[in-house]
Image (cartoon, rainbow, N blue to C red; front, side, top):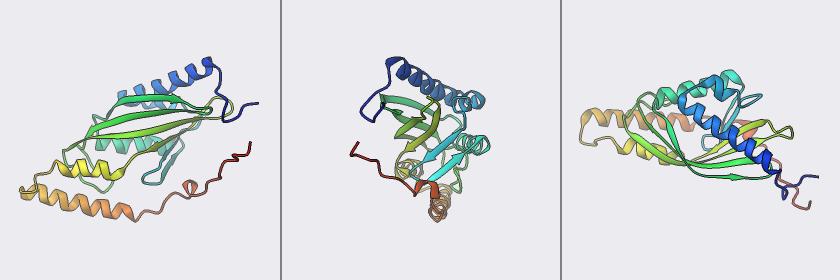
Amino acid sequence: MSTRFTLPPEDVLRAREKLVLDHFHDEVRQDWDATLSTFPHPHYELIAPMVVHDGNDEVRGYYHDTRRAFPDQDHEIIALRHSHDAVIVEFWLLGTHSGPLGKIPPTGSAHRTRMTAYFVFDEQENLAVERIYFDQLTVLKQLLGGLDKRNPRDLLTLARALAGAVATTGTAPDPRLLTTTPPNLDE
């Protein structure tokens, strides 16, 4: 019987790790078919904005929107760890803000943001979800910090970016992220 204290055998851990590394590599190459093939049902949970992208079309839309905003998006892996049901990856996400990010207009600034992603596997060893944790303010601070506050054009971009960020804060959290079940720690 598997518990939260039992790691799967080494071959399972190696297979999970390969799938996750392939997933990262395919995202950087923007090979969306290959990236999506790592899931039987694509599912992303972005915890900072409390947003879920579920299914092929929604995840492709997420890829489209983020690569429109950051066409040069890349990552640097810091650490990779295994748990009984997940591969946990700490990484730097990098990119230059060249297109709109939701309601935030492009600033031309680069960001380098530390993140953690949990790649959670189901009982059949299928990738069930990629759950990403990061600080939105760290990203925004870097995107706005590259603007020249003495340049009228950049001041206009700053005002539009702040208005876009404020407009985004009114979005209701996805209810699927609000309903959680505490683990049974008595097992």
